[in-house]
Length: 317
Image 1: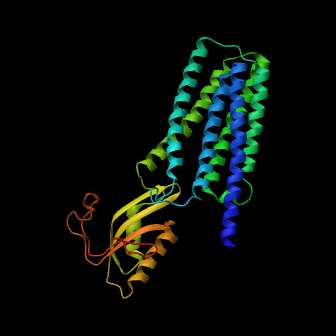
Image 2: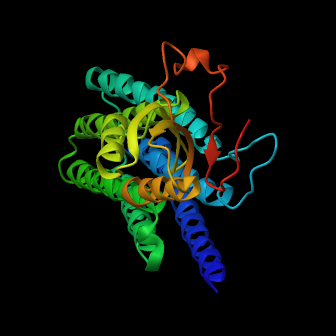
């Protein structure tokens, strides 16, 4: 029954994300077309912001999909890294789009362009409704518990500001004919896009470079293990990285020779899971301290007295 619940929850996440992605992508295209036809740079900028939403939704959708795939001998962690690679490429593309919007906005200050306020207003209102619909889809039922869905919802919520600003600019143009409000607003929206794109670029590059998750301090983790588990003397040679949302950990643990080796191993894994939500860890238990450079990454071929033991209790040679 638990498996059925998990499957239905993933299916619900996938359905909500797919629907929100479809709505966002359609209205992103509509804003591009509307921006070109109306001459509104603000609509094009908001379309760029909606592109960040569409990308976030697509990556969340791919993460849910790839999480269902079993690892293979060729891809032992599955294909979750594809979402990180997509995020990295998307961030670079967004920065390039933002650069174009900024350049065009500056040019329009010197050479004002006519803007059809009524068409701009209609497209901006449609974009606002699309964002509201996407936000509602992402906040139904258990999907709020999924980190990917919550992150995507925050992207959509941020884009609401761009749509509201485009509506305000359209109303000002219709009432006063003051077209400089269009490039001014486009610059403000561009700042929102740059902020999202830069954060996405940093996070994706950090993961691609095997950086440790920001919410786990490896030094504190080592101190906590030695403090809370009496049999643990020392924790060293820690390597922590992330694949998708899954933290991966390897570490050496110098222990007092236990009466029950397997029980202590289970206790260490349980501690890592309860306190750090790490369910995939490789723990090498040692009874003597590492000497010299033998525990450094560059000396990984050195033979230790004991072999690493994984969650399933099997030793690796």
